Length: 158
Image (cartoon, rainbow, N blue to C red):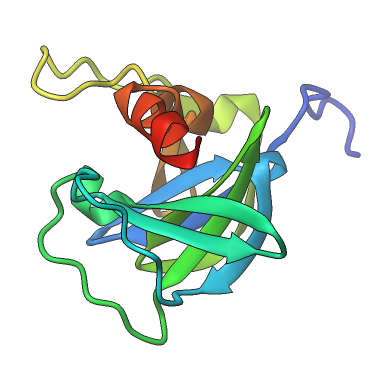
Protein backbone atom coordinates (compact mmCIF):
# COMPACT_ATOMS: atom_id res chain seq x y z
CA UNK A 1 0.00 0.00 0.00
CA UNK A 2 1.46 3.33 -1.00
CA UNK A 3 1.95 6.04 1.63
CA UNK A 4 -1.10 8.19 2.04
CA UNK A 5 -3.36 5.59 0.41
CA UNK A 6 -6.78 5.26 1.95
CA UNK A 7 -7.19 2.54 4.55
CA UNK A 8 -11.00 2.68 4.26
CA UNK A 9 -12.47 -0.70 3.52
CA UNK A 10 -12.86 -1.38 -0.19
CA UNK A 11 -16.17 -2.92 -1.25
CA UNK A 12 -16.55 -5.70 -3.79
CA UNK A 13 -19.51 -5.71 -6.16
CA UNK A 14 -20.62 -8.23 -8.74
CA UNK A 15 -21.26 -6.21 -11.92
CA UNK A 16 -24.20 -7.24 -14.10
CA UNK A 17 -26.16 -5.72 -16.94
CA UNK A 18 -29.86 -5.08 -17.44
CA UNK A 19 -30.58 -3.51 -20.80
CA UNK A 20 -28.05 -0.73 -21.41
CA UNK A 21 -27.22 -0.17 -17.74
CA UNK A 22 -24.62 -1.78 -15.53
CA UNK A 23 -25.50 -2.56 -11.93
CA UNK A 24 -23.56 -3.84 -8.95
CA UNK A 25 -24.52 -5.87 -5.89
CA UNK A 26 -22.50 -6.80 -2.81
CA UNK A 27 -20.47 -9.88 -3.76
CA UNK A 28 -20.98 -11.29 -0.25
CA UNK A 29 -24.69 -11.80 -1.02
CA UNK A 30 -23.92 -13.90 -4.11
CA UNK A 31 -23.95 -17.66 -3.59
CA UNK A 32 -23.43 -18.75 -7.20
CA UNK A 33 -24.08 -17.97 -10.85
CA UNK A 34 -26.14 -20.25 -13.08
CA UNK A 35 -27.46 -20.29 -16.61
CA UNK A 36 -31.18 -19.76 -17.06
CA UNK A 37 -33.07 -23.03 -16.69
CA UNK A 38 -36.73 -23.74 -16.99
CA UNK A 39 -38.66 -22.66 -13.94
CA UNK A 40 -41.82 -24.03 -12.42
CA UNK A 41 -44.40 -21.30 -12.87
CA UNK A 42 -46.59 -20.33 -9.92
CA UNK A 43 -50.21 -19.48 -10.64
CA UNK A 44 -51.23 -15.87 -9.95
CA UNK A 45 -47.66 -14.74 -9.25
CA UNK A 46 -46.75 -11.25 -10.51
CA UNK A 47 -45.13 -11.26 -13.95
CA UNK A 48 -41.59 -10.54 -12.68
CA UNK A 49 -41.65 -13.60 -10.40
CA UNK A 50 -40.81 -16.17 -13.06
CA UNK A 51 -41.40 -19.14 -10.76
CA UNK A 52 -39.23 -21.44 -8.68
CA UNK A 53 -36.39 -23.89 -9.27
CA UNK A 54 -35.17 -26.76 -7.13
CA UNK A 55 -31.54 -26.05 -6.30
CA UNK A 56 -30.07 -29.09 -4.56
CA UNK A 57 -33.22 -29.58 -2.50
CA UNK A 58 -33.93 -25.90 -1.81
CA UNK A 59 -36.89 -24.27 -3.54
CA UNK A 60 -35.56 -20.98 -4.90
CA UNK A 61 -37.85 -18.23 -6.23
CA UNK A 62 -36.62 -16.64 -9.47
CA UNK A 63 -37.19 -12.92 -10.06
CA UNK A 64 -36.63 -11.38 -13.49
CA UNK A 65 -35.10 -7.99 -12.78
CA UNK A 66 -35.66 -6.84 -16.37
CA UNK A 67 -39.42 -7.16 -15.85
CA UNK A 68 -39.25 -5.71 -12.34
CA UNK A 69 -37.45 -2.61 -13.63
CA UNK A 70 -39.66 -2.31 -16.77
CA UNK A 71 -36.78 -2.78 -19.19
CA UNK A 72 -38.78 -4.24 -22.06
CA UNK A 73 -39.45 -7.83 -22.97
CA UNK A 74 -36.69 -10.10 -21.70
CA UNK A 75 -35.07 -12.66 -23.95
CA UNK A 76 -33.52 -15.82 -22.57
CA UNK A 77 -30.38 -16.97 -24.30
CA UNK A 78 -26.96 -18.44 -23.54
CA UNK A 79 -25.87 -15.13 -21.99
CA UNK A 80 -28.79 -14.89 -19.58
CA UNK A 81 -27.55 -15.43 -16.04
CA UNK A 82 -29.33 -16.25 -12.81
CA UNK A 83 -27.51 -14.82 -9.80
CA UNK A 84 -28.30 -17.01 -6.79
CA UNK A 85 -28.42 -14.73 -3.76
CA UNK A 86 -28.11 -15.79 -0.16
CA UNK A 87 -29.71 -13.10 1.99
CA UNK A 88 -30.33 -13.52 5.68
CA UNK A 89 -32.74 -16.45 5.78
CA UNK A 90 -33.69 -16.64 2.11
CA UNK A 91 -32.08 -17.98 -1.04
CA UNK A 92 -33.40 -16.52 -4.28
CA UNK A 93 -32.45 -16.12 -7.90
CA UNK A 94 -32.27 -12.94 -9.90
CA UNK A 95 -32.35 -13.07 -13.72
CA UNK A 96 -30.06 -10.55 -15.44
CA UNK A 97 -28.87 -10.05 -19.03
CA UNK A 98 -25.24 -10.85 -18.25
CA UNK A 99 -22.59 -10.74 -15.55
CA UNK A 100 -19.32 -9.00 -16.34
CA UNK A 101 -16.90 -9.09 -13.41
CA UNK A 102 -16.23 -8.36 -9.77
CA UNK A 103 -15.36 -4.73 -9.14
CA UNK A 104 -13.57 -3.38 -6.09
CA UNK A 105 -14.57 0.16 -5.16
CA UNK A 106 -13.24 2.37 -2.41
CA UNK A 107 -15.77 4.46 -0.46
CA UNK A 108 -14.51 7.52 -2.44
CA UNK A 109 -15.61 5.84 -5.68
CA UNK A 110 -19.20 5.48 -4.46
CA UNK A 111 -21.26 8.62 -5.02
CA UNK A 112 -24.73 9.12 -3.54
CA UNK A 113 -27.62 8.37 -5.89
CA UNK A 114 -29.14 11.55 -7.28
CA UNK A 115 -32.58 12.57 -6.07
CA UNK A 116 -35.09 11.65 -8.75
CA UNK A 117 -37.94 13.67 -7.30
CA UNK A 118 -40.22 10.70 -6.70
CA UNK A 119 -40.05 9.50 -10.33
CA UNK A 120 -37.93 6.56 -9.32
CA UNK A 121 -37.84 4.75 -6.00
CA UNK A 122 -34.21 5.26 -4.97
CA UNK A 123 -34.56 3.66 -1.52
CA UNK A 124 -32.81 0.51 -2.69
CA UNK A 125 -29.86 2.32 -4.29
CA UNK A 126 -26.57 2.48 -2.39
CA UNK A 127 -25.27 4.98 -4.91
CA UNK A 128 -23.29 5.15 -8.12
CA UNK A 129 -19.95 3.44 -8.36
CA UNK A 130 -17.40 5.04 -10.65
CA UNK A 131 -14.42 3.19 -12.04
CA UNK A 132 -12.50 4.80 -14.92
CA UNK A 133 -15.15 5.38 -17.58
CA UNK A 134 -17.65 2.94 -16.08
CA UNK A 135 -20.57 3.84 -13.87
CA UNK A 136 -22.42 1.15 -11.92
CA UNK A 137 -25.79 1.57 -10.29
CA UNK A 138 -25.14 0.01 -6.88
CA UNK A 139 -28.18 -1.81 -5.57
CA UNK A 140 -28.82 -2.66 -1.91
CA UNK A 141 -30.21 -6.08 -2.72
CA UNK A 142 -31.55 -6.65 0.82
CA UNK A 143 -33.64 -3.48 0.59
CA UNK A 144 -34.81 -4.25 -2.91
CA UNK A 145 -35.72 -7.82 -2.07
CA UNK A 146 -37.51 -7.10 1.19
CA UNK A 147 -40.00 -4.89 -0.56
CA UNK A 148 -43.54 -6.01 -1.38
CA UNK A 149 -42.41 -8.79 -3.71
CA UNK A 150 -40.70 -10.63 -0.98
CA UNK A 151 -43.89 -10.83 1.01
CA UNK A 152 -45.43 -12.48 -2.05
CA UNK A 153 -42.47 -14.83 -2.34
CA UNK A 154 -42.76 -15.81 1.30
CA UNK A 155 -46.38 -16.81 0.61
CA UNK A 156 -45.50 -18.65 -2.60
CA UNK A 157 -42.63 -20.56 -1.00
CA UNK A 158 -44.60 -21.44 2.13
